[in-house]
Every structure is written in C-alpha cells, then in structure tokens.
Length: 402
Ligand SMILES: C[S@@+](CC[C@H](N)C(=O)[O-])C[C@H]1O[C@@H](n2cnc3c(N)ncnc32)[C@H](O)[C@@H]1O
Image 1 (cartoon, rainbow, N blue to C red):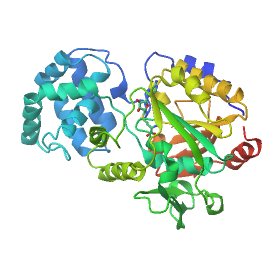
Image 2 (image 1 turned 90 degrees about the horizontal axis):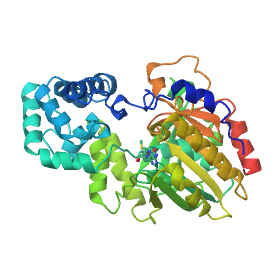
Image 3 (image 1 turned 180 degrees about the vertical axis):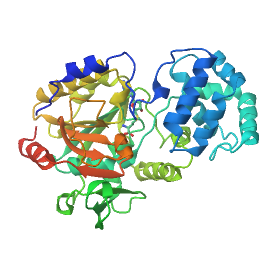
Image 4 (image 1 turned 45 degrees about the vertical axis):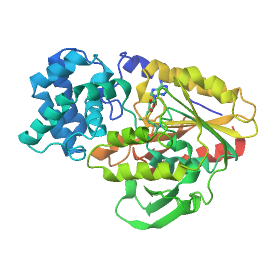
C-alpha cells in the first residue's frame, strides 16, 4: 500500500496555528473564542450569520444575526456557558429546536417572532443549557456512502470496515441502502443528463441520489460483502436504540433542509434490524491500533473517514496518516485507507484544480484511496466527480490487495 504523506511537514508548518484552519469544514463556530466576553459572543454570532448560515438557512441566518445585536442575550450566553465549543451558535440553535422551542422548524421571521424565541429560550434556560452541556455538534450523513460505494465494491472482498469519527455509525452500513447514480456528462452533473443507474439493497427504505460522470459500466453492480464493521468516535450516538439521539441529529440539520432530515430518519429505519456495529468511545488515534487488530485477518481491512480530520490540529492529522499507513503495512494481507475530507484538511493529498471552478466547488471533499485522489465529492454525498487517474488507483488496489 502506498500512502503519500511526504509533504505533511510542510503542510503543518503552514497551518499549524493550534486552532482549526478556516475552511468550509473548519467553521468559525468550531474555533475557540478569542474574546470570552459578551462582545466575543456577539461577534461569533455575527460571523456565523454571515459566513455560515447565509445562503444555507434563512432561519439560522436571521436568528444568529438578531442574537448578535442583542447584548443582553449575549451577556446571558457569556455569563453561563464556558468559553469555547459550548458557545457554538449551532449548538444553542439546535438545543432550542431539540426542546421544541418556538419556530423550531423555521426560525423567527421578524422582530416579534425573535422576541418570542428569546423569551421562550430565557424561560427554559436551565433545560437549554443542560442540552448544550450534554451534547455536541455532530452530524452523520449516510448519503456519503454513495461516494464510497464505487471504491468499496472494487476492493478485494470480503471487507472489514473501520470508520474513525463514525458518529452514529450510519456510514458503516453501505450495504443497507439503495443508490441512484444519475449519469451526467461534464462536471458536477453539468448540463446533459444521460439516465440513471440504480444499485443497492433491494427494498431499502432509502435511496441516495448521486450525480456522477463515473462511467456506468464501472459503477458497482453488486454491494460489497462486509463481514466486520466497527467505529471510533469521541461521542458515539445510537439513533436506533435511543430516540433522543435521533432527535438530536435531526435538530442539528439546518432548518430548510427537510430532505436531509428525512433522509437521516429513513437511513435509521434501513439499519434498524441490522446488528449494530461496535463504536468505541474515544480519540481516533488513541483507539485505532487496538480496534484495527480486532478485524478478521481473512477480510480486507478498510480504514475510512469523512468530514472528520478537520476536528484535529494539523499535526494530529499527519500523525493519524502515519499511523494508518503503519497499521496497514504491518497487517498480514494489508488493507486500504479511504479518506473523504476537504482538500485543505489533508493538503498533501492534492486534487487537480478544476478548469471552471464555481463558488460551491469550494465545499467539495477529496475522496482518496491510499492517499491518491480519486474523486471530488459533494459534501453530503450528492455528487461524485471522478478524477483522472482514478481507474489506476482503484486498479492497483484491486490487483495488489494492499
Ligand atoms: C462531521 S461528523 C462526521 C460523521 C461521519 N463521518 C459522517 O460522515 O457522517 C464528525 C465526527 O467526528 C467525531 N470526532 C471528532 N474528533 C474526533 C476524534 N479526535 N476522535 C474521534 N472522533 C472524533 C465527532 O464526534 C463527530 O461525530
């Protein structure tokens, strides 16, 4: 197996600030407050409104903008929440929705509606605060399986899947969903559609749509055979057994994206009857060696992750890449590493620049197999743009098995 981490040091020294780098996946609300007081909180909400919510959720944009102009409410936040992640705007907004606060689905429209939201939130502050202190912002996007499937299906079978940053583990069940690959010429679904290829688990209650120019003949005809699955997360959720965990995941989906919330619930239904993968609570580097050692030796071990490494400081990302490489190299029969992260997160995995970039391209993730970029993927699995060289990367993995 070849895992190229050769430029990791350079990448680190450029970005190792001790904070998360600012990318679409290292959002300002995940950074640590530099100003722990009321003004810092107000700035954080203003920043969130403009830089995060704008264009994605009118409700969250309006709400966070109004909070930023409400010094009394910002006082409450700075006085009763510890500085840092517990002051993420997204965490408060989700907590109120989780508790069925006013306008939980749509958010305020106008000053009077904001007044009602504010009054309710202050009246229920003890409960809201308890949710904030107990929970964390974390999503789980099972539709990302649509972008993983073409790679998983081409590796030597059967597979042992190990996902780091697994959240609720929904991406550990790529064989329980159906997929509709909408064939599209040109970039990101371009102008000319050319039919769809549907594959996946028959009768699954969920079908993930994915636009792609991946040749129809090379899309998977069969699902991967998965004989072992496990994950690691700092805060594993179990939306199958714990309805509140599903409610929390749904509360974190931004208002206006009901399709995503419905998709999440349907995916939970799709895996309800399946044995639940073990998800170890802990740090993905600390827990990885012991968990990887449990994978059955006769299966191809696939260590994968999507939208996770951004939470690690750059030095830890490089450490993780080295660890994965050494674990897979040291394993009889080898294994593979699939990463699906924003290009700025693993900058030594470079994807070629697209000839006609569009603003939304900035959000795309780079799908890489053993450190070689294979595709650019929509952040929620909605598109899969195959890169030149993908065939060679997948072919090498298939023939060597390591
Ligand atoms: C944005 S979610 C992505 C979840 C899932 N990979 C997906 O694609 O839907 C990131 C997850 O990584 C987890 N996480 C962040 N840092 C971690 C760490 N150091 N060790 C283990 N899990 C971590 C978070 O708890 C969260 O569940």
